[in-house]
Image 1 (tube, helix red, strand yellow):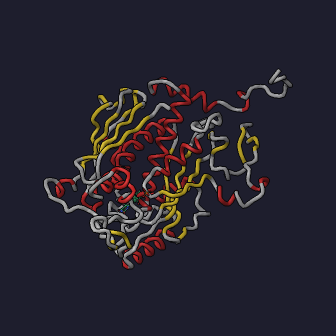
Image 2: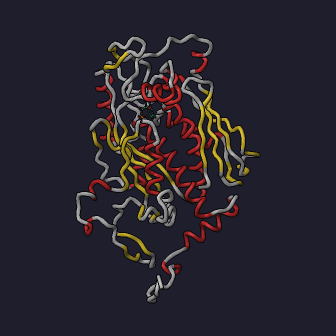
Image 3: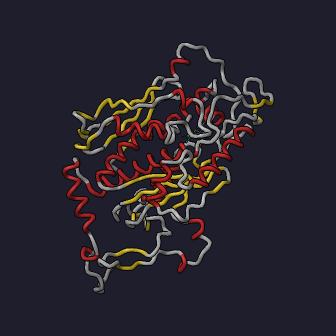
Length: 397
Ligand SMILES: Cc1cc2nc3c(=O)[nH]c(=O)nc-3n(C[C@H](O)[C@H](O)[C@H](O)COP(=O)(O)O)c2cc1C
């Protein structure tokens, strides 16, 4: 698989870093291509203000990308691309003696990480397990997004549900959902949904509690034929679901209307194949969410992701002080109350990385100049290109 990403950095260390390897040469790239996604990850809504429910840290950080390698004269050169984002909060921690953290918080990697690595201070788990790491993913994802955009592929997301408050999006076509979400302070396409979600988050803050929710990531303009049915680790279905579930606090992924489909007979689920007016193959519906046999169908990719409620709660949870063995209540540290509106952009980043990887796999080539005509040929492929079928053959003599 051509594209590889590595991230490094701790929540309050000096920087978070990304290395993206395998991008073709000739892609125009500047920090300005990355910074808007970093701002969205910070929860800076349309008015440049943090989303309701976002941690106060988001006011402290001004995430900006520094391109350290792989780009010359504003274009990628095919070499590994290194991106650095500084943690402005680091200066508050530098040189400061910090009391050990001994009470693990349920829902975090505090206890599991400490047991696994033998840490004597739970902060050693917290620092790397923190979703601050998603900054590095978003930086890599923005570069993958730039590549996809060269081929007319758009990836976006929107929030459908927060803490049980569900937006009715039935009247919104997919493109409109993506556009309208960018104008909403909750990343929700519907104004009524935005208002109801904001009220729900404000109420949970007053209740000193936290919320999770559901967002959808959509990719438009995909060609058919990305991914493969031939082996488990080539199926795009698993690659996408795995990438989304690798994000902190994501606990469920649904492809298309998978759970509703599971309750219906097959004739009411599978997307029937027809020819459009131009003679091309198309489908009546898209209940499969744009994937069949682990391969893109050419229809919109629709992925739904469930995020658990934020684990750091103002009202304490029961735990045990590992220093004494006695029962203890969790301590609170500055935190999001609800990060669902910020999480969608991380989902987009992971989907961009998987799709860019699958596109490069399909097209081959080392430069944009090589890739462009190959993509045009892929787009032109139609019924005429399907090999002649219908001749009987002996497959296994
Ligand atoms: C964008 C984003 C922001 C998050 N912000 C916080 C936060 O402020 N406080 C918190 O306790 N958890 C936050 N989380 C979730 C934790 O990182 C997550 O609950 C923790 O890593 C454990 O989840 P896991 O079991 O999936 O690893 C955030 C997650 C994401 C994706």
